[in-house]
Image (cartoon, rainbow, N blue to C red; front, side, top):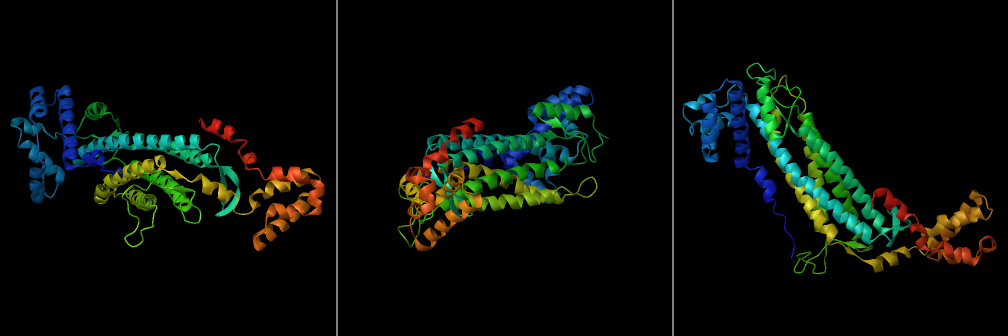
Length: 430
């Protein structure tokens, strides 16, 4: 059975209900802060906290008239209050509420994404441990290079996810700020205590300086980090797709009972999940560009960023969460075809051992240039005539004289290439 991603938890964060609930949280805390200062009667602040309520449907109805979502929100809430409503939204501007609430929502989304990153790191670590000693052909430029450990591939991805976790923690910190500083950010109509009080209660830091809005470099950093996470997941997915090709077949993403690969070709087992993740990475890069373009606003604020963020902030967190969950499932259920790994190690007739032969000949006294030309000559014949590389070397009088068959045979042992895997794993803390 395929574990289907529902995204319910992330979707709830970006619901209108939760958005306006966060607005109300900020408003109630601001009223309490004003009461602490003695500006708003404490009784009024208590009544606001007790009775303030809203219905999304009523806000939407009022917004059709006001054409302003925050005004519609404040009026909808005022309908649930008595005379104390005159102290609701006291001294505040719209984005004191919107941006501070947005930061809380982004923090909530970040908890989910951080959990997914940890799950991805754990899944990759398990595969790295399992396949630490599994020999596989390494490839450069898409061409067989030298033997390596399959586990190192997973360990490499694990290390990159770990870097993404660190970057994401920093980006989350950057957006974990609030602002209640008024229409142009100079606290003309609001005491700084209100900002400090509200932010502390919400687990945010007050922005050291803002205009009418929090500065959008923070959000650009955040979405840029999500794009980097997407790029890493794409990197992993693309490699799995390549290794699932019919000509290679070393790895294969999970294929479930009842799953169909093609409407026309019953034999197909396509890497559809990995392909989807690669597509989502493109989307995230587009969102990152849009976030960068939101940084520059006219004077103390214009509204050009708002419409963009209503799309890119929910979507970027949702699709990042989706991609993480899908790739965790892929990595955990990955099929490793050890028979094909062994066959592919032999596919070039031993050409992948050319460097070791070269170095052994140098150790025996040949110049590097002479050794290189000798080995390359045999290698080119093996390529072009589909011959055994080792047999060609064995028939060469200089190789026989310099190395002998025992040393030559030892050059073709893939275990030699795994001798420092333990060292690498130790550096990674595996």
